[in-house]
Image (cartoon, rainbow over all chains, first blue to last red; front, side, top):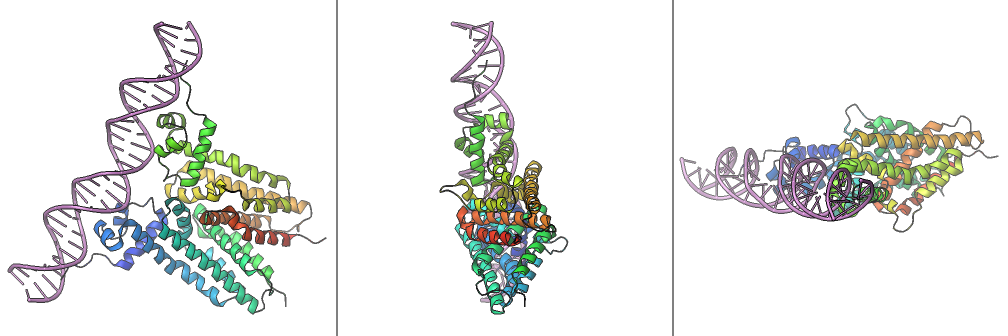
Length: 198
Length: 198
DNA sequence: AGAGATACTAGACACTTGTCTTGATAAGGA
DNA sequence: TCCTTATCAAGACAAGTGTCTAGTATCTCT
């Protein structure tokens, strides 16, 4: 019936995600997209709706791969899950793509110039979700009697979210995930101090 | 002897600073620089060494105006100075240019794409300085007996720096300085918890 | 008033940007 | 094998980029 596509969509989007991660939206040209992914310029238009469409799909893919899996344990864990999350944030392999920081943070900053509404929706939605997850973990800690009943979950969650954002800036500045381990350990000691002695 | 320049350098650099702050380096074109500042395209080359030169001067000006003055009280104050610094971070007027976040954070993120060495020097130097200031304030707090002698100044300073970076991302995302007041107040309560009871 | 020196205006310049167009290519069904 | 259909490769395209180049304007000192 028709010619087969020369690329696998999932593989291509993932490659695009890494490219956007490394170079950002503005600095990554379509000719570069062509060479870094196997998406040709024609397919970029017809199958993805141009550069912007591919970017949006790459953002979604990023969330699926990186963020959602990292946040999941918070749903059913207390302080230890929270601590594990932050420890993981500063623990990276060699040649870890996360050394480039967090695509979401990078995008928040860059999109405040670009002001693409769909992109803004993705980032704000993600961070609302992240805050909710922190709050959930803290609620779980309350249920389990790890922290006091009147602990200010919501404020603490906002603080943790803000710190997590800061970690990604710090990582991007230093080009290394593990560069942030010192402050993460200090935060962990703070979280530990919330714990009720039994 | 010669024709007078049509612009005041200080005023022009300050206008450029605001423009770069709002739009970033890449997205601000030279024709836009011409209209937003009173610098003409010719002067941009001869007096500033092009767009990049002006950007570097704008960064320096930003540090003089915003950062250095905000950090100064930390040199000779303890926990209260630290608390005041963070409270100020989330306290803005209406139409505050700081609603755009922090030019330094924005630049850290954007320059990791651009990789201009001189720019990188400015940002890393600034954040090293900021960390040192936090450490100084904590040292002062130790001298004054506000916190224990074996308090981990260096780790705490890194944590505070990271949090401050996160605040600026959060502010940029929400377009408002005061949006970060909740988490700043929570951090203040944490700092208070470091204080020794007398 | 004239000369000399500097700054400005306006346009040209080569390059890159994202998107669109055109003709060739490749696949499966009749 | 031919036809239909979708995909691809390559180039065109207009608009935008930062920088450079003339010609003109404006200043101060003689």
